[in-house]
Amino acid sequence: MNNSSVNEKEPKHIAIIMDGNGRWARNKGRPRASGHQAGFRTTRDIVEACARRRIEALTLFAFSSENWARPANEVGLLMDLFLRGLKSEVGKLHENGVRIRFIGERSAFSSKLQQEMMAAEDKTKANSGLKLAIAVNYGGRWDIVSAAKTLAKKVKEGQIDVDDINIELFSQHVSLNDVGEPDLFIRTGGEMRISNYLLWHLAYTELYFTDVLYPDFNEQELDNSIAFYSGRQRRFGKTGDQVSKTDA
Image (tube, rainbow, N blue to C red; front, top):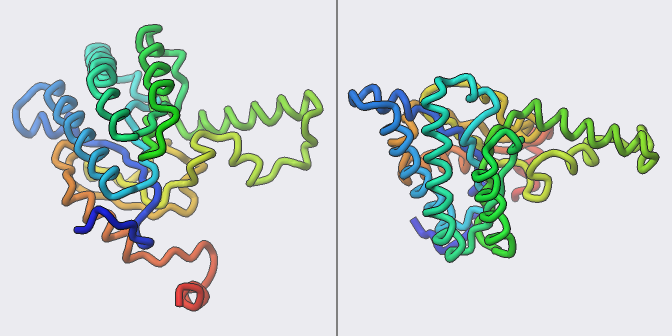
């Protein structure tokens, strides 16, 4: 694999649902905490692999708005791991030119965690390398409703007319509006659904599902998903013949 070149057949933006940490731990007779810790190490490796490949953007579903329903001790563990991970990894990510941002309703988190998120974003905001977005307390429906509220407020205040609202304008008001929609969606862990993740954004994304549990999702598995993507013909409503002529 030549990581120094940019392959036009490779995705520019990858979105991942990191599923299977708990089952990985259970299969090994370990506490769920060990699965989340192993998943954190996998995340570090995948971020590095995407940076080497010169993938432009990577969006990771770290904590959904529905995950609050999990046992309180597990939620607490995830928050602690998240906070410690931020403190330990931001410096290295910054050195490697990664720009970090968080999408989702962060007001539900502790003030300490919110401060760490803001500090990470501020420290890396001028970086021009991999654009790493971490979805925390995020839901695709929340994202769409938030955009609708913003546009409704603009109509009410006379900034825009209701007839000005179209797909392009709406897209400017959802999360990740400046990095483009994901080309490739990956879900590990064997589940075949998108679980309220980037609902607006995935309209034409190629969807890749793997039975591999997230702690076992390594660079070879990433290569497999990218190979799947490279073999797809992205038509966006056109016929295959039309796309083939354009590519010729």
